[in-house]
Image 1: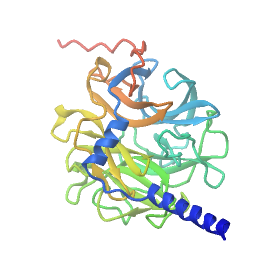
Image 2 (image 1 turned 180 degrees about the horizontal axis):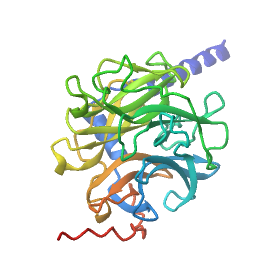
Image 3 (image 1 turned 120 degrees about the vertical axis):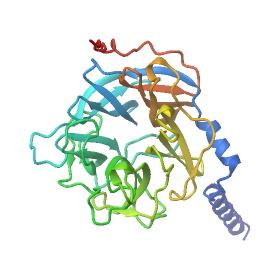
Length: 374
């Protein structure tokens, strides 16, 4: 009887422990400050990836870990549109180019012929965890925004899905679903996404909070009266198979009514979900672009942080914009990757950290000369 009682007691304690571990906390000021203290990165290490010359712009890092190495997918804009590339690192600071994973199409009839801006899907969301790129249906998946217009984020952009059964650490072309999975022209398009669509980030909904297997966070521009003049907001869509997606909810998740709120990236810090994202131009063009965060205990309702920006312009290499977060914690150090844009409109990838790791010696190439006025 004593053994039986002991087993029952241990089981009860285990259940209580799990209940406590996963209990939803009220998202109050104390929790928000706790998260800020955990994720803040006051030390700017500097540029870690820059274009080889001024005909290219580099953007939107996504970082994952496999077999003891770090890898980054990122975007290159060359005047025609976005392509998605791959790089590798041993230490998160020194990076080597590997090659492309999504290129321009040769077939002009492809809906995404001139734009393929990809982001890794289904990554382990655990803060300080494996950062492994996980599989579904024996495939590695990328969500991306694409389009057929030439130029910087030009024309009508829609969201597509790409996948591979090969190792994502080797540069090769991902296969893509034939048609986009979400477009501004859909019959069920909402007022917040009826103009054009941008970055997308997909995670598993393991507890099926939404009643579905997967959640996509995406930002899009739209408006009920004048879609093209609308603000950019973050919303969500859901899926059970990574192929068929539908919008979720009757309002955006992050909405500042002006400017841009975009590029959501989700991590779970202890018992709380954290969305890293960037803001821009909320009070006007001079405000620039900067990185923020929001917090949730259910993946649907988000509380915005109202304190200091996580990253903002402060250095010559990011004195126009410091935005588009990807944040990881490794060996006790937080690495905040972001897109750095200077006033010469050169774009590269920089890092801010929670610990002083010194300064990068990498710089942009000489900026393009301005044409003299006659």
